[in-house]
Image (spheres, rainbow, N blue to C red):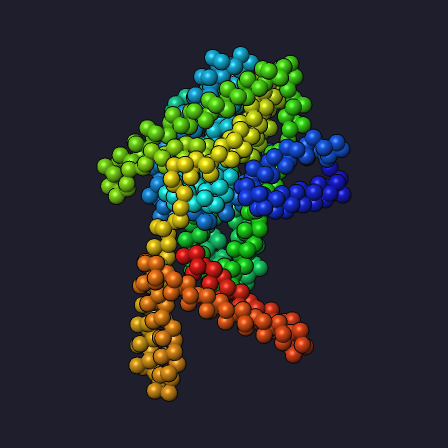
Length: 533
């Protein structure tokens, strides 16, 4: 593609992301659903540029930063506590899905045999948590459920791609992997990926000791997921797990090497990257319809609709069938083997986890990455049907389950605020204020009497906030704390008004305005966080 055409396509995609994200916000519909449908609609527009989905672009360019960003905001404590459940989904469910799809394909889809069904199952075995997260955040899905879904989506990419390797080996090359080979490959996939991610993370931590410049640190953070992915792939392990490991490792240590200013800048940059890439891939999914349909020949519409409907229903049913016994086994292991104090999962929460098995761009990229010919030179006859079924299941799960998920969550009575995190935030703020008051008391006693009133002023503010937090558990205390934040916000708005007046009258320049405005912006961020927590 020529440079000018490439620029035009990129500009078109970015405009689509911005416009349809705004439409989704106005319609109060999760933006992944709107963008997929918008891309699907635009694929019918005459003379619309055809934008193919390059699997190499997805795996090597788009996937690493998305995984890294997701791992960065994942709590290691929750990930570790839910590791058994995550493993049951990311390993057990992937294997069950691949086997189940292979069996159904062999028995009910005449165009597919067991081997090609295995490949199809591997292609669609991985879930995409972006849509589920965007919906759950809006309606307030319980934190435990969200932690499980996020953890599953971080790990099952690696196991799904491993299953795909085995499927291609059987279908294309005629090889039959043994159980021992599969276990050995999986263990190295995990161990090598973890090791590569930790090495890359350690190198980044070492480099951060010599860097104290925001733009450089942000560029380093953007380079890190690609370095981790390439390191994992270079040792023949999982680049996906390498990226996830580096993200979890560096996220916990970033509080020590990132300055507050860099943290704020980095957060803004990564939010933009995350949003742009996710919007891009969801739009691209919809735009692939012409390529999907161009390969389907020799099938009538009734057959295709039947195959797509049956296959989508089977995939949803397989997840629901697996999720209930897996949840019980996971809880038993956590309670009796790991001695965790985990509460048994409710059947309602289990059903929601089962209903959020949405597929995304990774499934479609995996389908497009399938070879077109077998090892002996014969065409891979089932490839186009696999691509078609993968595309259908993405639409059915993403749009169908995505649109019904808010209703399911509300109908089951699971919508609500995250009270667990709010309580932890209040506890942490209380402990910090108490420590600050103790420090002020010690310093006041050691300092000169002339500075006593300064310490008293700061101590008064701390005690006021501490009293509000102590009362925050009840409604009256929450109102008082909200009033305190409201007063501080009003004073900050007045300071900002005066600042603009000084700039507009020519008494200060734009550089001075930006310096003070940065402080006010940090205050506003703190106010917003206090209102949410």
